[in-house]
Every structure is written in C-alpha cells, then in structure tokens.
Image (cartoon, rainbow, N blue to C red):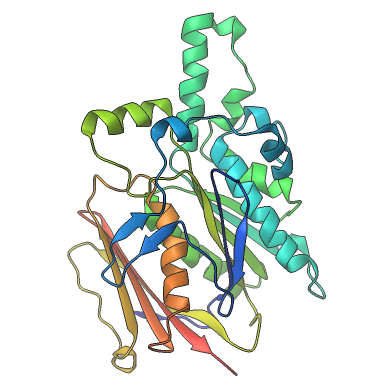
Length: 314
C-alpha cells in the first residue's frame, strides 16, 4: 500500500433522505448520529426502514427544492437536490471557522443515476408530446457532469468541481483526487458527496429482476475533508492502494493491528453503492479497537481499493 504524505483529514459526515429531508451531520470523531445505512464488521449492508420504489419516485416538496439553493431546481435531478443539501450543511459547518474561504473548497460528487432519470423524462416527453413541446431545461441536467457544477454554483464555491461515476469505486477515486489537490496546495477543504435516485427505468429493471437495491433508499451522504487537522483528535487518510480484483492487499507490517473492514460487492449489485462509502468510513472512525483502520472495497471482476486511516491526537 502507498504511504501518503499529508493525507486529508476527515472532519464530518452528513446525509439526507426521505421522509423528512432533514440533513443530519456529525463531526468525526466525537459526535454520534443515526445512520440509515448499516455496515456490519463482516461488511454486510442493510438499510434502516427501506423505501419502496413508489415512495422513491415521488417528487420532492417545493420547500426542499428551495432549500437546496440549486438554480432551476424543478428541472434538476433529485440527486442534485440531495447533494446540494448536504453541501449546504458542510458549508454551514465551516462558515464560522477563522479564515474560511469558499474558493478553497473542491467539490466531488459521485452519482450513477441522475442522468438516467433526467434523460428518461426528457426522451419520454419528446416521444409522447412531440419534440417541440419538450422541456428543454431538462437536457443540461442530463449531462453526467451537470451535478457537480450545479452544486458548486449553489454553495458559491469557485474551485475545482468534478462528478465521479464507477459506483462505489468512484468514491475511492474521489479520496485520491482530494489528496492530490491538497498535496499540490490547490484547496483546503473537500466536499465528497454520493447521491442517488431511482428512475422509472431502474425501478422496472429491479422489479423484473426481483433483486432489491443494495441501499433501499434514495438520498445523499458525504464526507467533509480538511487539509489541516480540524481538531485535537482526527482521522487521516494515510494509506492507499488500487489494484486488480484478483490481487491481494498487502497490509504494511506496522498496520497489522489495524481494524479492517472489507466490503465485497458482486458486479451486478453496484447500483446505489456509493451511498455505502461515507457510512463505512464513519463506522471505522468511531470504533475504539485501534487507532488504525483499513477500508477495503472490492467489486467482482473489476478492482479492489484499500484506504488506510490513522487517528492522530497531537
């Protein structure tokens, strides 16, 4: 595993979901909160109070759209609204810090469902009502990169913004991207947010397969990362490795006592998987068995990513 120099610190976690659409956040370590996604020590995933497809397909309330701060929110993907709400909360957590500058914030969003939902709506309108009668404002939101730029605009940051794909492995790439930006002094903070929604098309596929989503809730969950240590005690990304699926992760000799959480997903079970990542990191950063923790993410026939976190108290 690659030893990182000056890796990013984890400052907070946040999430939003139905039915109350309230954003819940917690500073890490120290504050506790209730997670809608449960991750066991064995890497098994379960959802608290799962939602039906019909519930997840319901439109978002007007007050939620307004609270997101997203321009043209009614024509935006639900995922964009969810992610913007979490980003607004992270912005609030930092706004009182001395010297905080939104222009030193990078935004990384992981989403694999928004463009499908918007494209399906746009194409359906065109076929049923005629292309001259379509809502043309839907098309910009169908671009995979649209979510990141919309969120950056909503929270008034003017640094790098990128939208990741590749399911849960995209969140690993987002962590690496954050480290690179911090290492080269391009940013001081990073908002890494996973956000997912269900489309009519996805709902039909899941029902036909009779195979539930790995996370049976739409919404967003993210991590707030800092370049500098945010408190007296903080978890820091210290190790990183991205390898082929069939290769073993070689844990360094001085990390043999680390708490290890291994999440292995079959290749057909990755939809909504980015939502797992923040809660898996939170689980490791609230355990008290060791001051070192390793999260291993494996996706069948694709690749394996390992991230090592270390608790620093000085």
